[in-house]
Length: 362
Image (tube, rainbow, N blue to C red; front, side):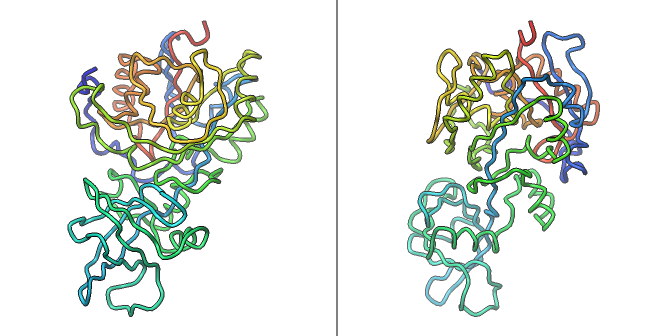
């Protein structure tokens, strides 16, 4: 398909720079192709009454790293300020990272993080550039690894806010909580699974009282989720890969829900992509552990998921293509036009929509 088919105009004031408070006060647009009306304006707090006893929500429990690091490159007596955003862990002490400005770095350079320009060279977190790639990517080997490295990154780093927020304001202490789901457990993401940001403890209790159960999977969201699609045809796009895991216990539970007539509802595009990666042609979900680069566009059959909760996505993005595959391009274009006209808030800190595919409930 032509990438232009997934374009739309979004006024800048519709981009949310802060989340709703409390989290579950965000608005929720229900999109149901076979219902009348097809679009309903609700709130996240209405979710329990919109679901049925026996349904199961699937959450991505990845935890976002404070992956944006400011440092100084040392080369002989010279030093220069650089900014790096960690992209993907290669092993216990090595990462790929996006460097700005990348032209200041070359293989063999030493980088010191966490110190001001006038601070002496004692202490701090050090790394060495082992290689450079295209588009400003570098391979960075830190001087230590494992939990000690994770603690240092957490102490020195900033939350890696998406470009459409970071270009308008700096990250601050509030983002350390706001840009993390309340159930985040498995550290490794450099972007949040944003549909889950709306959930609160009280909402979980209300869902449980309704008879809606929950399960957790892990997909470490990468910065590639924000990359624009630069080709003209979706067939030519190369999808980024991300590491994920679905345990056998969770897979068995999800298959059991569907056998009993319940629905599997993915909270976010990351949970949906992982479940589709873990399912066979008949929709049975199996245990999964490894990389996935699944690219879901209109024409790709969704096998393992019956509904999804997701935020509003960027034009021409792989995420808007995914929701168009799930509920249909025409209705999603109508839904986004409705959301823009009604003042919904877009992107990571914005409002959400509950999507059902054509045929749901028939």
